[in-house]
Length: 533
Image 1 (cartoon, rainbow, N blue to C red):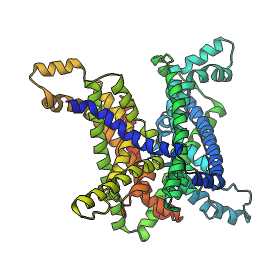
Image 2: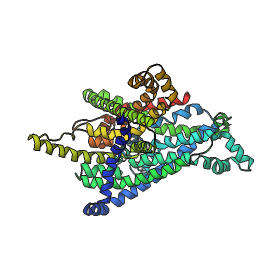
Image 3: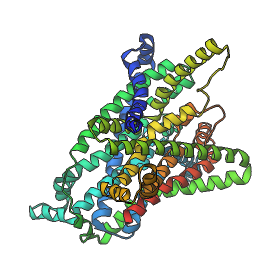
């Protein structure tokens, strides 16, 4: 049973190892690499990342807060539908929305082509979708549900009563929103914005589609275009420092989320909108849902049917699908097994050290995929070399690469990144197993593995299923880790999308994208079923 106690610490060490590798390169820099980066790419990367982050958090804050306020407090046509439908963009990977936007609104796209023919103009006034504004708009439409979900929960806990309190103090409705309601919801909103910021910093696929240079694309190019793992490590070390600052700030905001909640407020009578306000709000909400989900899904479906009917290679597509499904299944099983062992250890041996280890083991989700790929690859490549030398020395056998070129690197990286995703539902299910349940089971003669199999597993099963589903879907959509650490020829649906969009072949990327969107709907459905209980 001592092994149970070690599981959280082994998992924490697994997370800290790649972080330590990356951070060590920051404190032991190669002067020639830093000089080259400072003279060529670093200033542009910092500027691009700053404006991208600022633009996306501003856009998501505006959309998320306004949509949350309208659906939580007001009554207008379609409100019940929009309340859950506005979460649907979470099922759409941002890089999928990105290439659909380029395919529709680029210079050679159907919209500009039709406008040039209709207006007989060169459309010099039409905004450039490939610029910074285009990236910001696409990522805003993809990430606003993070702010919407948390802000709506905050507004539902306040309800119409917060406005009534403000009006009793002599404030009108607008003043009450900005001076009473918004400050009370600030911790939740800040938490959502911090999630958006971390997603923005970690994003690779979207900025790659737009050819917009940020740290994630620079890390990939340094490794696979310049063949300089040292340069990629230096860039990753700087990015991870930025992420750590964001994590610290996010923890400070989370610690301040201590407002009292009145559950009856969610059922308070809503404010009925009338006249042009009614249709203005409906039109605004519908337009966001249209551009964020309905339009991309419709265009993807059209492209998928066209490409499938023309010359789509069904055998290769089935190979991509098998790689994605098998890899996702392996990662889900491995992650859930480790997390179950970790949660059991925390239950049996509670204490400050164990809690700290569990908390450390679940920070991997905040690390960008490109950073994890570098951090996992470097130590495992070193270990691979050492093992090959030992076998050659002792047995005179040339083994070549034992770890590199296998699925092990990918699975370890997935485990580090997605332990946090599976920990929450499994730990939540574990909380239902009280000590009184254990005592009742022991009184019936159940001990050890028999108790786990007959009592604990049935109680944990819903949490394990939810955790496995979330990890499965996240691995299917994960692009940078898969792209940078996959064995030769092990292409997945996400890799296929990257390759096709890199060549501007939007139609060929549509069918894999539709598959990912359908997979992404699974956690949305699970969430809606959970909230309806």
